[in-house]
Amino acid sequence: MSPEARILFQQILDGVDSWTRQAGSAVRDIVDISALTPAQQRELQLAIRDKLQSLVWHILGRFDNVGCTLPSGVWGFRILARPYSVDNGTKTSLPEVDIRQGEADYADMWQDWLMELNRLSVPNLPPFLRQDPPSPSGSPAE
Image (cartoon, rainbow, N blue to C red; front, top):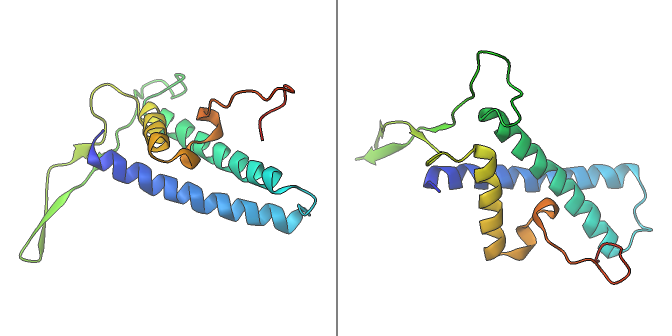
């Protein structure tokens, strides 16, 4: 994956984390969650984060027309990085770079990046990518 894609995805994930906290605060302002156990509160936070990460996947999918949802006449869109170099304090534009390498869809790149991040730090894996084993009772593991 290109360095530019990693930079973009980290920036997006930082935004997801921030909005997850803000959404959690909004829920706490509306609903008394004191009756929830700490595990249930964590699951609520993970559910919010999962939905936001899924939204990012959905939006990135529009760039490559995943699901063929774009109107007739539009193949898709590109995400271009605009790198620059600095020489003696002067910024000079470099050629634009598509963050995609090869034929991967941006949405797939996002999921791959999240899975790679998970291999480095397990708590970052969103629920829609987790492979939690079912608990013996058949209910989700806590």
